[in-house]
Length: 367
Ligand SMILES: *Cc1c(COP(=O)(O)O)cnc(C)c1O
Image 1 (cartoon, rainbow, N blue to C red):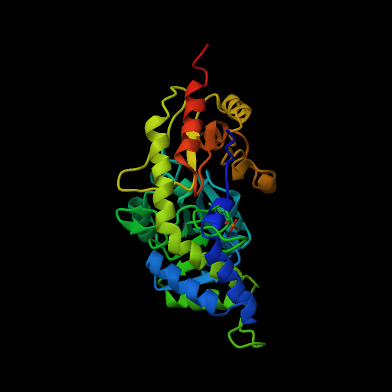
Image 2 (cartoon, rainbow, N blue to C red; image 1 turned 90 degrees about the vertical axis):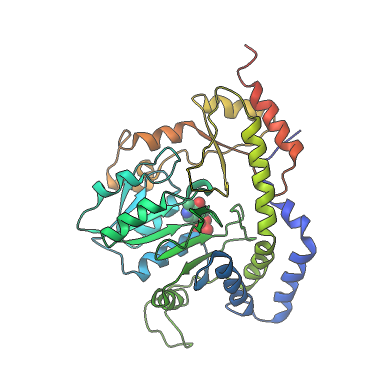
């Protein structure tokens, strides 16, 4: 058997007629940017998340860039961000000339709320919380800290579509929730796409201007904006995806539970979820001291895996000028050496999961 890390065409073929029809409807409508499909998807998505407003944008990174820009966070400002995250979280900050202040993760791989306060200075303007791998961060504690220090709270929900903490959906805790619909995300488009959600009408109006050249009325430009709009075809396709997401998520979680109850290899640490938190398992992350060996072994058995992420942002070449070195964030760096993401995708069958389980359970067991 051969198991790819991802298998994005499965969902397309499963709902092919609906996706094809949605695409044709847009193509034949003669209207391709900021039309009825985008408005409809924004309606659908804000209803799903439970916010007052939603704006479709071009990508998850753009959602983050717009969030900080809308709050006037920029030069000389500091933003708290988890050290263990995808680089886009940090780029959202630095694209606005603000400074990222990295904080180590807790045992659930998310921002350690107990380490946030000692990193707050008089320059701190916001906390960017990332609900990494699908699991909602410790929002109770983080919200208390943000309120106490009057900091903006922005949520990177690129990996957490529909995850909850204490029954509340990620993206609704802070001032702005930023979503990505990159094809591999839990709700994935067929190209780049993203969205911001908020309950604040002022933020909504500002981002609406910013995403479209700073313009409300064509050729009248009120502020310096960008061009970062969700396009009609992606919006139409996303509405189809969103409609099926509850079932797709249920199926994903049943594969996750199958992994959790059947992977028994003592060299492998399985992911855990915080009390009151839930995870939509964007990724299924295991940890092993023998990570590289395990990855090679799985690849020999035609099982595709990935590492999220092999180089933490503070050690990436792009941020060399920030002056960090190995050892500055040891928990994050250890994760980078030990995490491995197993295959998990919409439409994955139990037989495929069983094959992965069987191969993994034999790792280093016959010596
Ligand atoms: C994917 C991702 C992003 C960026 O989304 P794009 O749509 O690829 O720009 C941001 N943050 C996290 C945590 C992500 O996983």
